[in-house]
Amino acid sequence: MGFQQPCLRKRKQLVNLILLLVAVFITFKMAERCLKEVSWIPIPARKMGSTVTQLQSWIQNVTHKARTKGATSFITVNMTKTLLLSAYLEHRTNPRQVRVIAVVLREETVSYRCVLLCRNNQNHVSDADLQIHSDHFGFRYGTADIMCLIPSSCDTPSHVAVASAGFKEEHQPEFLEVKNENKKTESFIHTFTVCLSTMFDFNNVLQFVQSLEMFQFLGVSKVFVYKTSCSAKTQRVLNYYTRKGILEVIPWSMSGFLNVSRGWLPSHGPGDLHYFGQIAALNDCLYRNMYRSKYVALHDMDELILPQTVKTWTELLPLLESKYTQNKCYMFENNVFPNNVTLPRGGTEPARWRGVPGVDVLAHLHQEPVSKDHVYEKFKIIVNPRLVSSVSVHGVLKSHSLDGCAWVDRNIARMYHTRWSGTSCFFMTTNHLIAVSQKHQLKYKKQIITRKLKTLCKIII
Image (cartoon, rainbow, N blue to C red; front, side, top):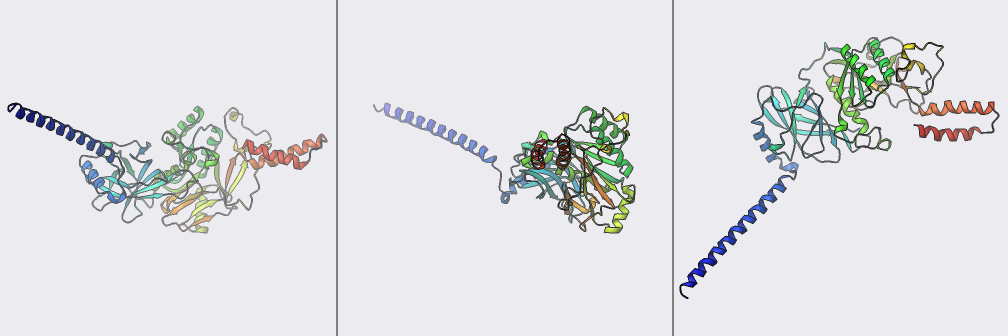
């Protein structure tokens, strides 16, 4: 018995040691799992120090050959709903900044940091300020600017990446090229540039060709189109004018990232972002031409700003600057020419246009009366882009040194808008049916016809 007791004690000690080791191993695994879960939780803004340290450590191995997206590709910011579109050097702020044009989920709270690659072979982590544009038409997503502060030790940033508070080295954010490196105040490549946004499912070939030719008559030397999709015939036209040098097509793949709407209000079309990202496209076009064009006109495909006293924009703009001063944007009254109302042309239709899909603007010369209640709606602008910080579909949202906007006298210039009109559907069809009812001595009353046509036109629209 005396010999067995020490042996039993040793066995018990061995079992206890094994149990202890198992307990330690289980504890270690549980802690490791917990740490992994915690590492994916975004760090609040007030605790960004570790994120900055990680970024600074990561960029030590980053060179100017770091992975970058193509000129028209979009970049997602990891662990956020943010989509980065383009980046431009902002010379008008003190100190200078990099403006990253983005689309963000407006209800999401995110803290950003910018990684700047500088031309003097220095890399920096910079603070970022999010500025969401006020125009979003009630959609969940909206256009925004992420402003990256440029430290004095950074000569000129060539590329920028944006990271969130949840940055991890394995994310390896991709870089955007920073454009507008050189500031210009004169001797621009173009005098007039037109920004046309956003082209999707487009087949209105004839009106598009007529507009491009009219732009050239007016003095425009460059037109930008932000294209999502179009017909084969439209693509042939795009290719032709691109080879000619007047047109530049920007691939606009927003629908590959977000559920974009085909309408300008959520009630007009389901989706999370207004009209295929139209506002973001307009702002990108504004900055893309900041130092390339003296003036920029923001248009739709079916609109033309036409002078009334002179023949070209080249003659028009000096008149406007003399009358309204130079440091203004110029707003042009909207005049609708319904493409569902055709007036006789006296057999002047060119045979070569037959069979070309689209609207012939010369066949729709009936103008709707301009209502006093709607005279200042749906206007478009021509502006010096260097005076503007952000734009919307109709007008300027935020200016830099702009002295307001001026309404241009309609007798000097106005906008011609050839589009479908429910108002003309109502008035023209009403008059036609009343005439038919009188001819056949039908007993329909005008009030009944009017009520039915209002319902019909709402359905058509």
